[in-house]
Length: 121
Image (cartoon, rainbow, N blue to C red; front, side, top):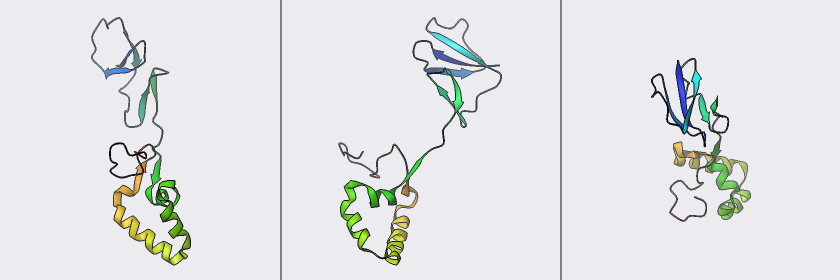
């Protein structure tokens, strides 16, 4: 048997385990579980005070950022003047240059290493 121990007022998860302090502090409560939760596939939801399926990560493509973000308007102007072959060539070079940094989490800055105070950070 496992327990998820959380703050009663906020639902914030305090710990998960098969060994726990008894009695719990007055500001904590628990959810009893038949087995250890899979924290890779599931995540603790403070609102429902239960484990829910972790949503899939949504990634943004920095190549698309270059073509669509207002900060890169000059790039967009040049991109629109290129023919399909030129676009493919440039896209291949950019993809190679970015490597793993091509994909970013949707909530991450469009700038790879933003300066402090950067409006797009």
